[in-house]
Image (cartoon, rainbow, N blue to C red; front, side):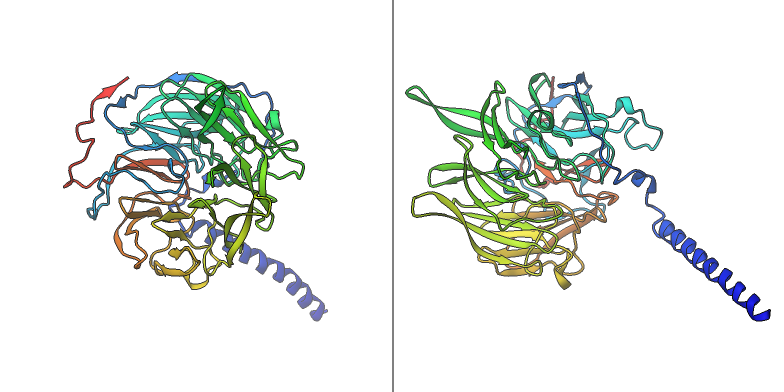
Length: 512
């Protein structure tokens, strides 16, 4: 009987011990970082809701902000107008920062996401999401108020000039927004998380045309919502005996019938559609143009490889099938000259350099120059930079002892340096301006400035600027003002050199 009682006691104690251990583990997890706002993750990874009958273009609301005069700087779309992530502006940036870091000009609470800003002539354009409650709070939500919001802000003070909102009740799935608007003097174009497209007047927000890519073209949206940023391109077309320039918007819905399409920015007319017999689907990558021997084409990473599509008629000119990354492909192609395309990804994909060559019939085709594993070069979600014949990027977790470090690689695939274990950047964004790398640690919110040189890692300054809550959104810089964000907050920093004469010093007047 004593043995039976002892066995029963043990059978009771063992589950109890495991239960107590599990409870202790939960407590440790919940308290290991007291500063974390755990409510932010309350309904992450919830299944996406199917959306129907979205009323575009939505509601326009004027704001109190004013656009400053005299500011001509521009970062007009994802990775700038040159699509290489490099600023060509002559604004001089400071070589060092004060102990508190660079001056913060303004900040703004946002809905959860990773959508970055576009900047054009003193105006900031941002695709945000209204969570149905005041931004920056965790109160109850009003589903009727959930929706995509395009915000137009003043670059100088962050005040809202206008916004346009439409109702789309989307559940958070690692945030909501992921795209950067495209803007010029005449148009601002956006793609929402569920592939709703707006083309508006960039000054007053009035609608020009709209499109629902899921409803119209059967767009197959990736698991973590749309990461594809819109592209505004200028092409030459023949009209009678004249050659005229036409501004077009290019999209890749990746539906059953249509892989890619182009629309006239002025009228919304569909100029061409690319058939999709192989059912190539959308990734988180974005479309980039390439001019190859007089032939303009659009390069896009689909779920079934890389394609080159004619800018004239939308026909697929070539396809390279051996670049298929699962479960997600985020970095966009990096165009190098008129013949080479550099690709990188996570999930042990590493990197690939393609070269566009002509086959025996004179048609372009993509040929592999080299492919490296992640220990040499790879990128999780940010697109590497091409600057002065070198590539810069942050390595993945699979890069061994150099994981998450900034690195520089030559075009022939030789890694030249990495930033060292004390300089890691997780999934954070980076760009180059005034010959300097600006890189944000996506985990800690620390901004680092370093010299952009293949000679070696030369850090100039480092400062915490955000709380580090998934600071993954692409950065933008114009007129010396850097805009960056984490999951729920956007800030604008003044990086200008106070000792240098700047072209916009007198540009402080406001205009409607």
